Length: 385
Image (cartoon, rainbow, N blue to C red; front, top):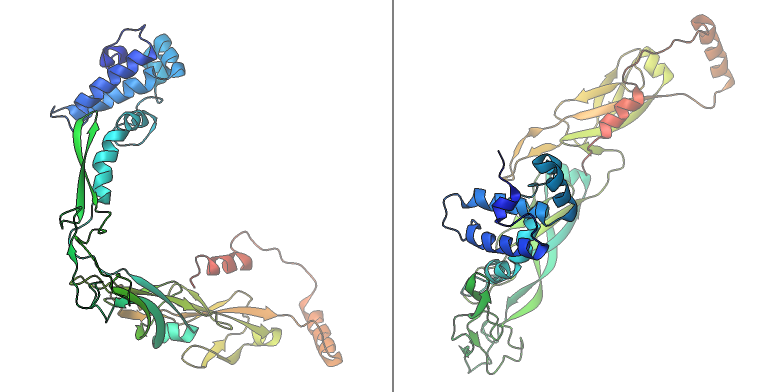
């Protein structure tokens, strides 16, 4: 049985909002799982939070006073511990100062020592065929490189950086902040030296004390077979130079694939639509079909209908693994459309009239199921770049 919410908070049924909030603050400080040493702190805090959620809301409290737990069933406890719901927001409001000092400091605190270089991005555009077979591309991009004048120290030649007087060379400053849970120490990056632990008295004139300069550089990048639109290729150690003795950032090359004149991509398969005339469809034919490997012969059987799909095994796109290697190729799917002529010669009209006389004029209804347009929609569902 759930405990009475008034008993949980230790207040009377006539308690006003100020009394309820005060009781909740006191109990929340005692039982919050992050600071409490009680074995059942999490369960207790959830119960306290649930009670406060109901009794601090006029409408929920009125229903609870009239019907008990049944009146607020489903309305209370939806937040719970860590859920971020209505009840938990009450806790966040009260402990906002605590989390600003504790959690905020954790986010602002940086790793001591020289800062590594930032990552860079470059974009490259390739053809459809290059995305299938892979290629190499020369790209140009800008990045931060070590200043040759000062060797990255930021100090003018003949001078050296000195220890920061504000942080005593630690790169961090500590500030004591009073919260409802007591004194909390907040650690942040030193604003004077920006975390470096040292400052430059006489800046290098070339880099203005920054130790690095933005320069354009060129690089040849391997594009693996099977890449698709938007794929990012990581080139380690080709981003911005870090501070002295710190690692260099990475370069991320974003691949863009040009649209092909008639090929489309769906996962690892290549889609091709072709049109044949009614004679080819009725009598069958041998036709040449383009693929990324060159033209191949395709046998169209007699009686071929619009929407017929032919599969050319292994004529698709290499399946690219996460490590950059391939695991076989997909297929090429050839979708057939039977084209009805809009203009006929006199001889063709006579031939069709003779054909029509042998075939009758009856209409055949189609059973329910997937029609041509349904298959076309499925073909392009989830189509890749």
